[in-house]
Length: 175
Image (cartoon, rainbow, N blue to C red; front, side, top):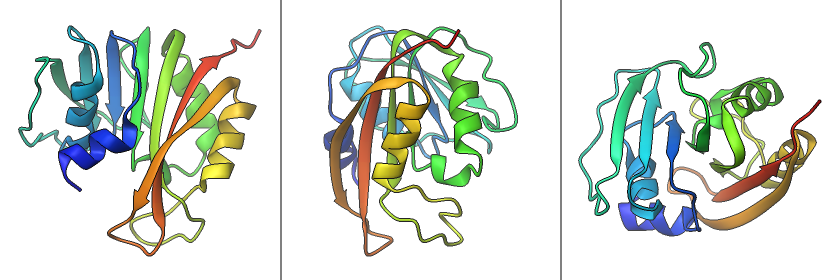
């Protein structure tokens, strides 16, 4: 996928501030988000492997900070996030509800969560714990996100199915 395709897939109005891209890989979606965020934002590019971002256009000169961390096993060292981006990383997580609860504690009120996944429930070596779009929408609603919006979809180059993008907002705090 090229940068412009990634930008189009997750295109929406985003809140300026501090974000985390969990499972950033080479940073394709990190830079897609950087192209969409208001100027002055910071993105933590988080990956379990040493973070080696491929340089891509960053017209607003967002501050992108690499952070090597396994976000499933370890707490994020950042609180008050305005958003979390997970592009093709949630399908590596077996206990999705527990992860959503854990990461939600790091979000500021009114924060946004952007997810890109494959619309399948057929596991394979590269997608061990897939989650269909409708199942992810139900999970997010069950975890207190009252607004889950479909952002778009595109054919997957790796599978016969499609990739989709969702944005979740307005998480209700549990007492």
